[in-house]
Image (cartoon, rainbow, N blue to C red; front, side):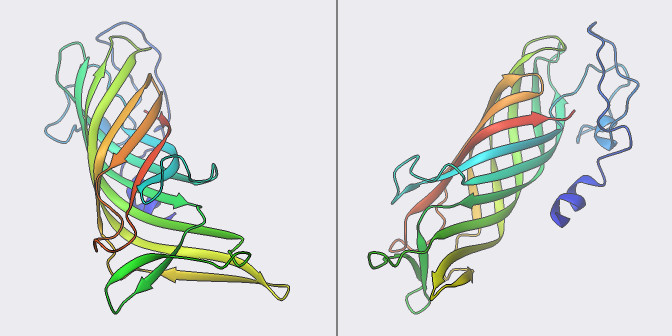
Length: 247
C-alpha cells in the first residue's frame, strides 16, 4: 500500500473522481482532477482543450506464464493487479489519437504448484520435484514491479467512445518470493523464500487494451524471463484481465 500512496498523492485532489457528462465537443469540465489536468507531460494544456482520458488506470489480472509451463495451466485464483498514473498527450484535433505515458506499479501473483529451488553455487533457479504425497498444500510466487508504460491510443469521437490502446512497458522488480504452506504432524508450516541467485530484475513486454470509455479488456505479453541463467527454470510472465479508468 505504501507504494500506491506514494504514487497517488501528487496526482489526486479532492475532486479527483468527479465526472463530467457534457456531450458537445469543445466543452471542458469545471472539475480539475489533480495536476494531470493542467500539464500533459510536455507542455501546459490550453483551457479549451478537448477531454483527456485514461489517466488513472487499474487492472485486475489473471497471472500466467509460459516456457516450461503451457499456457493457461495456472490456477484461476492467480490474481494480481496493476495501477498506472498516465499523461494523455492529444495528437489529433478531434481527440481520436493520443499518446499515453506515465509511471505504474504491478503485483504479479501465481499459485501454481511450482516450488522454486535456489542453487547459489551454480547461480541458477530450478523447479523442485516432490515425492508423491509430499507436495505443499499451497505455493505462491509473487513479485512487485515499478514500471514505465507507453502506448498509442486510438478512440472514436464523443463521450461514449470505443478505444484501442497498443503499447508496451518496462519495469524493475522491487522484490520476489515464494511462499509454501504445508501441514507437518498436524502443525501448519509456512516457508518463505526471498530472492533468487539469477533473478532478472527487468521486465518488458507488449500491452493492449480494448474497450468502451472507462472499461476495457487488458493483456500483457512479456519477453523477459524471470531468471537469467539458461539452465534455470524457463518461466516468462503473461497477464490478462479487465481495466477501469477513473478519469
